[in-house]
Image (spheres, rainbow, N blue to C red):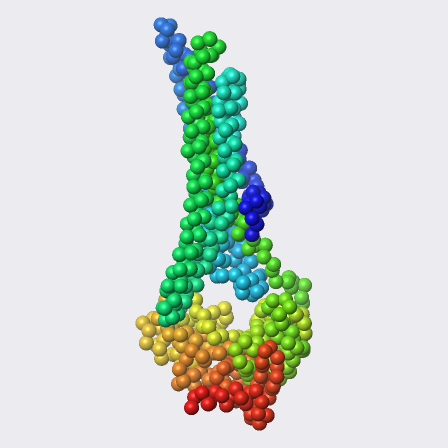
Length: 590
């Protein structure tokens, strides 16, 4: 983030990006500008006609007959133009509301598409709450504030310039008086705007931090309670809340200064026009009608100052929100792969790692020269202590991250030469953290697969021991699940394993898939997974080594290196690191 001195530049740059984004609606915006300008011009005609009406009535006060017909014509004319002005304003408001909401819609759509093109590294360094805040709060701020800001700014500038011109046409001396009394307002508004923009940016940033903290604490509320972390969570919340309240107060206070300031300038202008106008009337240079017109013109001249001040506050909010949204849209995406024509088809499951090296942070290697050759249909277990790089190897296999060096081949084809989506299609996964979405049980199991029969869904649930529980539910497989679904952690994991059974992909990844279930359910799921892995090359990550004894090949990792490989009996016979791990687990159980 730039410092305070950079904020005016960021304000301009943010609006440049937003205007470029709005280029698709340039015809609608041009129409809105024309309608707003026309409505404002109609408003400016009124005072001049009122001046004529006042002079006609003034003649009647001296004893001469009042020209009622002329007064009537002016009244009808004024009524007509004001009705036309109201209609133009209505159309302009409709156009701007349409543009602002379509812009919000497009921003959310672009953000949604952007998320699918971002590498996982972005999510490793960004909080979920902050990303959600950009999609919701920041986009809403742009949509709501932009609707009011642009139309208000256009009409205000037109009204300001137009009223100055009309005052000059009527009387130059009076015009100079009104303008000079308002210049101070422009100067002070510029000072306030330059100082307040940084607080609007900080406010949006703090709002993102608040959303991130709340989402984090809410999603892990049980852990917070279990470890009595409420105090620490509250301390952090209070700190973020204080920062947000402070920045919001400063931004709103600085923005709020503009309205009373413009009110003072307007009242000061009234006083000066009355004083100078009275002198000119006494000298016979102008009529009372001119003073009446000028009082209205002064109001029309100072009113835009107040509106411009409001528009500037809105523009600062839009700029701060736009900065965050376009910062997200400008994040580096995964490499474009539209030119890749190779495809993995009819995969048998031969997987080879060739001298794979990888680092999440440049210069800090996590995986060091990893090589392994896996035959089709093998059940491969990857074991090692926490932090050894087991899950990282799986992430690299699925091309969630790009290699620093080396290569990974499936059936002799480098995963670098095919599209990521094609690589992902070859795998089904069951992770340690189960995931369900709001929808029915059937929808959660089928997920993105097509042509799955109800019988297949039930057979998958029977295989993992979940069918009986589902049958006891009132709506059975049509029971809707949400974040607050009454499923245990183990049942959620059974559901995700059933999802993997439905998947027909040739490669299978099981990352601590039975870590959340009891021993009896683990045996049921283990049998289901053995059946599931038949004919598939499967990768099993497990800390409980008793669950992977029947694996065809066990890869033993330590500190990102492959240090041993073989089946269970071979590794035990070697008496190496695997043997130590295996025996230590049974010692701990004794």
